[in-house]
Image (tube, rainbow, N blue to C red):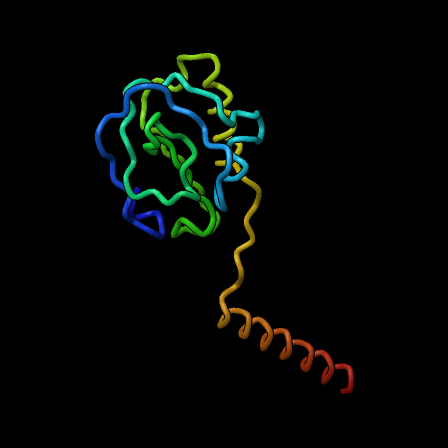
Length: 146
């Protein structure tokens, strides 16, 4: 995953035992993950012995072990090298086995689907487009005069 994020320092650490909770106040990337589609903030999940994620910035973390270890993170526009791409990481394999975890997965799916992200045209492309349109206008103007 590290080749796809702008800050490639995320690694998996040791196991985290105990309850895992969803963060409530995150900024700026994952603010909507705990609240949209379902309100999962402060809820516990059925994660069992998840791996800790080291090197995750606070704005990307959304799920934490009882001692504050990061076990879930998302990366959105501005965090990934491909414009508009989104990534989620959950470090446990049985997130779908408990009925309450479906809400977590629904929220992550909504985040991953995300709205369309507008990618600005690079400056040389903008200049080339303006020159082409300008030449077209001049050609049309000259044709009308002839």
